[in-house]
Length: 241
Length: 251
Image 1 (cartoon, chains in turn blue, green):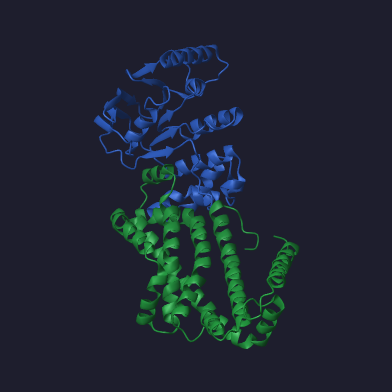
Image 2 (cartoon, chains in turn green, orange):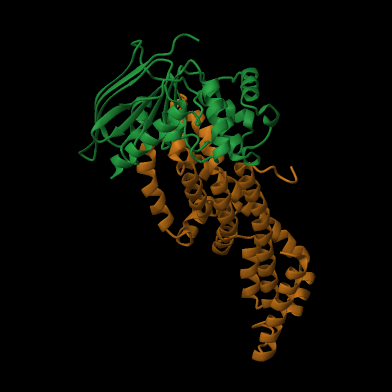
């Protein structure tokens, strides 16, 4: 894959005339940025702005890729809900992007990706027959199928049980290596474990938060990671009050 | 429902009917007993069957054309905001005009044959089908739209791959309503002007004081409607199961 672009967002966003946030945000190329902040502060809005989706508000400022090429159709997107279509098989769901564009899907690649997320034997199953973790893995494979240099994850693991979540985090880091990733999360532990860069969003702006020196994927039993997570949690609670 | 329940329900219905005949002591040309109606049904079986076939054809064709028209309209409305804004009020207005009031005009326009009855059935089911399917097409989780947009989806493909399958259970609901309404349309058409059909037969029997034959025709009509409702119910169930990702047991 060619080098993925970084992304720069700078500006303010208004919701019904009220300033929601004023922020400068840089997503470094090929790294994981974790975006935290209390509910309603506009984390998902930032993600939607860069994706070019409707936000219901007004944005003044600029959003640009570091390589100067427009961002349209260069960002893969994975949401909290798996958004698998219940009437399609897992394999067909993986290929939905091509179907929606009216082109022929690359079934061999889909099969390879299913294998990579550990669902090779469930290709013909309907989503209803899968567990929550399996469904999220299928959604991850669908995101990979789009093969975009930038990937946005909007709390994709928050509905999973702790064990499955840890597995999914490891899988995501492995398969998304080399891409520019923005992960919106509520979970300080998740951010501390995965991030190259942590950003805490509040009405005052987007502030970076120091991450441990060790590279992701970090072990949560590591003292430095543990203390980072605790301090981050304290900070977030302070912001809330 | 278990077969035993059905038999029991029919038994109770017949008993109530017979009870009413005994209590009111009504003459048979006012309220015939179940037995008399059964005799009339058997005696006039050929004429009832001939006319039932006519009505059933009208209902089936009306249901088919009305559904196709409703589905096409709903898709058109879902594709175009402008069409939606202009057409929806018109649709609601046409629904406010009672089809009963239109029956004489339709007979004038489309003749005394099956045509005017089919048109009547089409008119009466068009709105429920359109409305239910359109509702299903447009009521879609915003997250799916976002995902599709991020994938560069084409409007028509989004409709085909996501909106239509997602709306199939709603279409099933609309079709179930239509199955009950369609016979009403056909029979009204036959009342206003016809030379064939169960509605015509009922009027004829009523006019000649053959109340037992009228009841026999009425019961056959009701049974046809119930059968149609069951058949469409099975179809609707299949549509729901497909959209829900369940594998159909029989197919």
